[in-house]
Image (cartoon, rainbow, N blue to C red; front, side, top):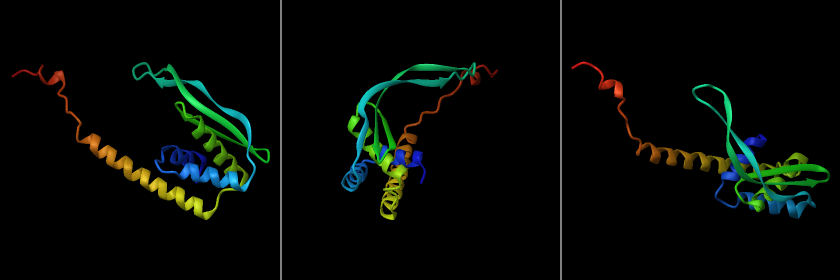
Length: 145
């Protein structure tokens, strides 16, 4: 399981998987805060659909944190004001980078959480699809009768 996939699962999970993983790591090894959890802003970049040139939409608030486990760094960042979640993500990232965490039990829990996310996303997509509106274009009215 790669870092991007693991982080997406932990951020979107509605259960307590991230909290459980963080507590597991904190009880197993000493965690040192390298850079305290704090809020910051990043620029949101988009692509203009007509001219195909990039532009900046504006700023997005994020929370970020960096921790270390035996000089192995871990980084956590989330959208919005959630410094505790950023800290927990950093702890799990550091533990994974160090090799402290990847046990079969935790990989199984992450895969179960991922399956639940996929199921939830499918339900949301199906619900949104039912509200889809079909628009007629003006070109149909320009045709001679």
